[in-house]
Length: 84
Image 1: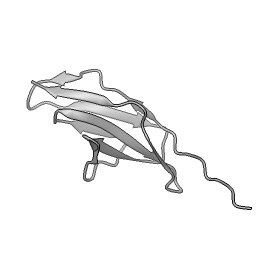
Image 2: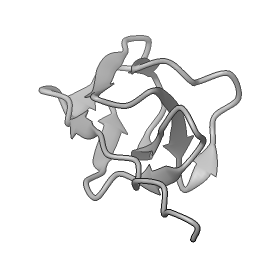
Image 3: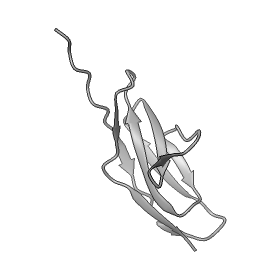
Image 4: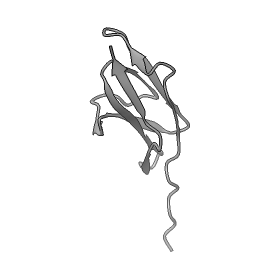
């Protein structure tokens, strides 16, 4: 009998600042997963695989969570960031 691997679970902590001035960043944070992949406008961001990401572009941000066995799930919440 083959057992099912657990679904990846993590926590996406939305940023405090959702509107920032051009040239600044807003730090996005996630926790409780083995590894991460950040997305901007539903596309993976190259090399954005740590539990935090400094967002400097307007758009919709999400994070994908991974277990050590590479099971994955996308965050339920997302952040919409605006640059002034």
